[in-house]
Amino acid sequence: MDQIFSSFAAFSSVLKEATGPDLKAHAAAVARNVQLTKPPAALGRLEELAIWYGSWRATAQPAITAPLIVVFAGNHGVTAQGVSAFPAEVTAQMVGNFHAGGAAINQLAKTFGARLAVYALELERPTLDFTNAPAMSEEETLAALKIGWDAVDPNCDLLVVGEMGIGNTTSAAAIAHALYGGLAQDWTGRGTGVNDQSLAHKTKVVADAVTLHMANAPSPLQILGRLGGRELAAMAGAMAYARVNHIPVILDGFICTAAACVLQAVSSSALDHVIAGHVSDEGAHRALLVRLGKTPLLDLGLRLGEASGGALAIGILQAAVNCHSGMATFDQAGVSGAG
Image (cartoon, rainbow, N blue to C red; front, top):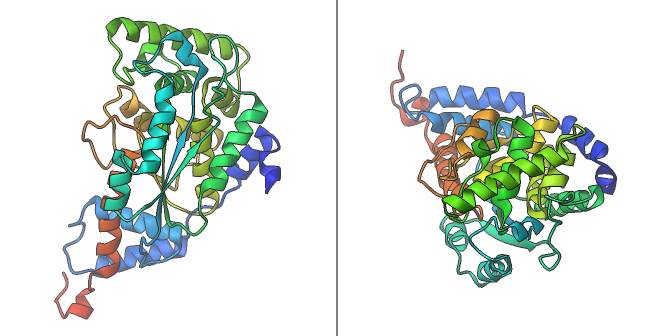
């Protein structure tokens, strides 16, 4: 298995060769949906979600019994450029809060019966300031991808990944700008709440970094290494593991989605097992979801990160699956179906 992380090429090959959903299960789930005691399409997107989920779990009557939320934390050298309203030490402090059970994600995990795991990635050794040098080497990027890959419990049946890292909206904006072009201001938002002057500075940092690192047409994984952070790479690794092992994923916010975009750039089918949990209030998140063709389940003005929006959407998917698998058919209920 370690061979997957011997090079970017090896990792990309595994992602490109990943198999798709179970077509027989998909057809059986579609057939079951027609027989349930409701008018056709009366449950709207809940019906689509349940069929999608069942096809990835290879069953027409799925159940979500072991949802997993994994939060990765990393520190960024680019914070030396004054791109955040908070100091870098907040990352470690928030990790402590996660472990103590005091954060929003702890409450959301309990609400939906999800197990929460938290990984702090070398917080004492931030990535390099990517305005001067690549944030990570290929070896460091691969190591972070592997941490994410290994963090996913193979027995989980739903995955939500999230992050904590002061400075990581700058990193995510730079990745989005590098992947999709346009102007730096198209992708750069206020993050932790910087003022107008700081936002203008942050936007220039993103623009200058992308100009520096796109000079020789890097691959998507090289972009992740040069402009990303360990927590972004770990999220990508976790989502890749889930893709290979047919574990459905709910996307969180802007930073998580930027990490997912790297996988999509490697393989057009890399995110077929993924739905968007929500659209955040961080400016460019909606634009990223449009690029991925993902319609968010929720729009509540969230911009916290730490997997909070994705975790909240677990309840929507649970409702969809429970209705699909638990409802009676017309025959079972003795109800006359539409004819």
